[in-house]
Image (cartoon, rainbow, N blue to C red; front, side):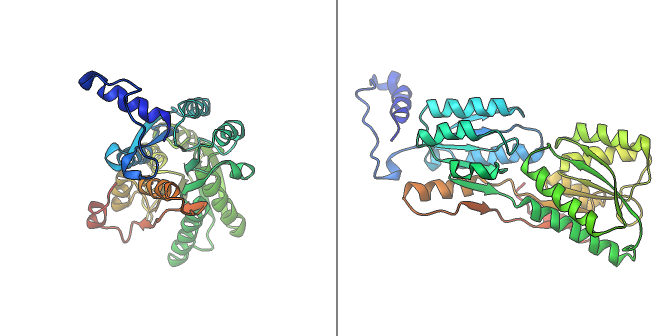
Length: 333
């Protein structure tokens, strides 16, 4: 077990029983129940309801009751802060590093440091670029391109059912943080669908940075140029809420039957409330409950069992015509 654990145990009981570091025995490596696993977790930030839920789920799962000591760092949307935190975790000699990268690039050097220190790295929520794949142990998260494919297929089917498959469809696209895996996957799926449908037009493509405030701002700017909009494709619920607020202030109706069709991702509770009201037509789930997946992989590694490199989590989608209050109330987030 890492020396850090022995130090932590000693500090905990030093003043109650007067122990010293020398008096505190090292936990037995062979029995997982006799030790705590030290994990350093660098979260990209707290920019959305989804992110907060993800953080809380990881913290509650990697708890002392479940056999862990968790060191948590909020990067506040800055990659430099994440690199600094990961380096600190390496210096603290943690057993595992978990992080959700802001963007896919720029991780080679710091992950090489972790590899040289023999610390397994688990990447969650977002990928890192392919040439760095040998530098991490496992990925846990969504298939973001598949999420986008679900969204554009739903839109295609919806327009066909309404007899609008040949209409000129004007789409406003509000992207997430540029260079992040959700943005890259969801954007690629939409752009591929636009190429396949000559009557679909991207009238605007702006970065909402996964926040309600930024999406409200950029949607307001778009509306100054045109209000002739059929679809708004937002890459998370925060952006959808901001875009809807801007459109409603401008007098547009967010309604898949009689107004603008709003597509969103994440399926947070608030996002699903908007879906129930019809303001969001489709909400594709991005499951934030990744803590149990992390726990399962770490426990397998501790037992020396093989693991999958890529681990996609279970997800679904919700549309305005089938969602019910009962469905929302049964959700864990």
